[in-house]
Length: 583
Image 1 (cartoon, rainbow, N blue to C red):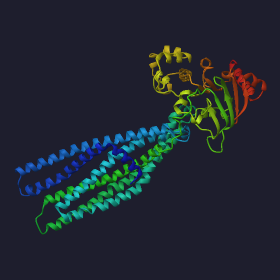
Image 2 (cartoon, rainbow, N blue to C red; image 1 turned 180 degrees about the horizontal axis):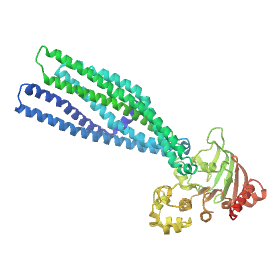
Image 3 (cartoon, one colour; image 1 turned 60 degrees about the horizontal axis):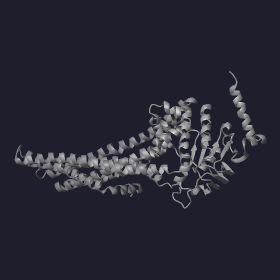
Image 4 (tube, rainbow, N blue to C red; image 1 turned 135 degrees about the vertical axis):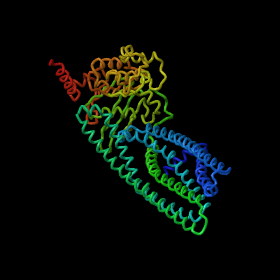
């Protein structure tokens, strides 16, 4: 058995009650469907051909036929509801597990994965699994039983005619086998083309500002059109295979078998009484054999898509999880002190970003980190957040190895404010509390300390005002201050600011400076600075250059040395003087 199918069936067996209800409804509907033509056969042979237009038996047969139709329809409805419910229960569990697996992946996994592809795995691929239960398993079981029941009834009516009609089955199975061989790679290609389209759409929407600023709108439209054309060509290949093997060939086989049945019936009737009812029942049953087999063949396409989609989802679920300590014997001590010894790291093998970094930040101190783009500043911050693990060397917080600190404790005690802070499509209160139960006065105080007091007074519903997707209802500076207010609320042992003032105005920068002063001495501060004015008062300043610490000292000491820091300070001063010149 296909391993993906086996895993899905095992998951569904936990819902045995739904399976039992679905199978009972399925069996009842199949029996009602098989009984209908047999009742009409009796009416034709016993009454209609004898010229009897009405008799008590006619009423009973017609009533039985109508009851069979009604009961069959009712049970088919019940069957559909039950199998849909079963599918939704299975998919609900798989989708949550897939999302959970995604959330537990290390940051490095997302660096090399397309967001559009990952979204498709959790949404479209799990939806394809639902189709397996709703349109494949129920259809195959139902139609398989229907074909079996019809063949039994054919044998009951006329064994010779049944022998001719049964030739349909191996011919159809041969067509089904051919279809699966031809369609499987095409269906896999369709899923890949669709994932590419999703990825392109997601990337274009995420980068819309850059695309329009650079005038590359037409380039992205052309690239999307090329991907769409690839999807269209693959889809048309699938359509041609379906048209040939699912309908045209099946209709031809059915017509040939019908000719055989009519010829056999005519030959048999030469020497005896013609039972028109038997012929009616056989032709009716023959149609009831052909259509289910065609439907089963059509469902092979859905089955193949579900297997491909399920394989992708289980590949995500089965990915090795990043080791995240949850319960250790380490004492619960403050994580104020930072120590890095001979730390080396590279995002890719053979391409080092940090080379032998040694850094010590005493508890409650303020450390500024500067350097040109690509010198390793942000990488150092991400290592301290344990988004990545160093290739070699030791990182300790509070005297404890960073790799051994329990996840919950680390996330509670260490925070980072990034250059582009992420805000959720929720209220100001929810963006501050992040799921924790904070009292309103504490939230208001954090906002005021971050310089957001005037914003709170201006918002129509205060803390409960919705700020929109990514905080679009706020200005750029307000978004940065809100991210800083999160830190002021929690008072972390270690706070890292990764170029948090690089893109804000002078008023916002001043508010950030005041917030930093409010935390100074209580939290250890590491400030990765684009503007050197934010770190002049730091206890130590570290200058990064090509992945190494080239200089360290206070602002005044580094200026007197006349090295890299002095040149950076001079360049910024010249830039500020130039911008201050009148037009």
